[in-house]
Length: 139
Image (cartoon, rainbow, N blue to C red; front, side, top):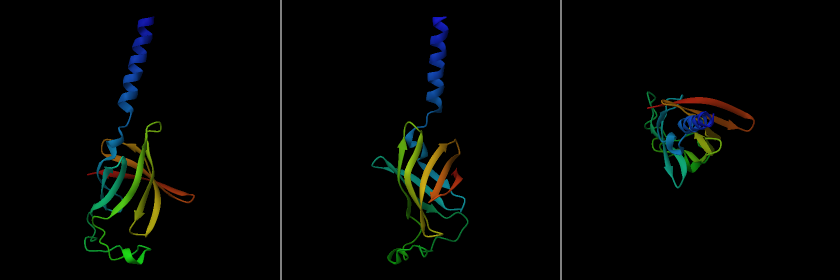
């Protein structure tokens, strides 16, 4: 009986380790639903993302014309950091407290990454009382 209990506890520990997400699991390149390619990277224990590609869209020479700060409207979108300050919460196994700039709308949204799968991540963006869950495909 004692041996069975130890076996079950060991099995549960292994399963929980297998499901646990590593904080760096989000590092990589992703295709967003708007066809922008974003690379997520780590800096000073926080996660950031910059535009590294524009998919099939002709954004390469476009500037950040929708930015509410007039002095930033001449910046190119390619290379622009649009995800900032994501932190990993070990107990929730999620990345939170980040923000994301939407160059199409010129708005900043709250950002949380709730799940990492083999070929995609689940992202929740929110502003005030509105939120939307999106899937970003790994590229």
